[in-house]
Length: 102
Image (cartoon, rainbow, N blue to C red):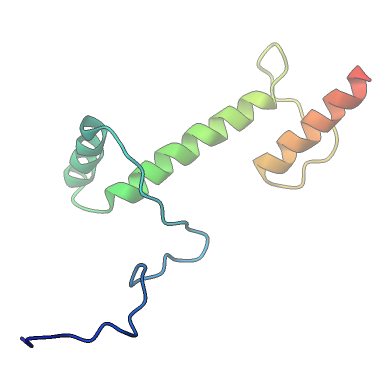
């Protein structure tokens, strides 16, 4: 080990960039939630608890978006042509509802 190191040309930030489509954040989660996700990963024989948290959040968001596409009876209603993903379908549904109200 050296007595001194030269950091004059060093850069701040993470060493490894996140993969495409991912954003690095530092959430503050309750300890019991983190432990639960870690235990789930361990019970399944390994994996990544952060990926499991991401999957749980994605499932929640998709469920919320699906609810926005339902009529008052809980039936999925697609007025207009959805372009394939849920967010586009929700936007189509909101636009059509706004047109009906005006």
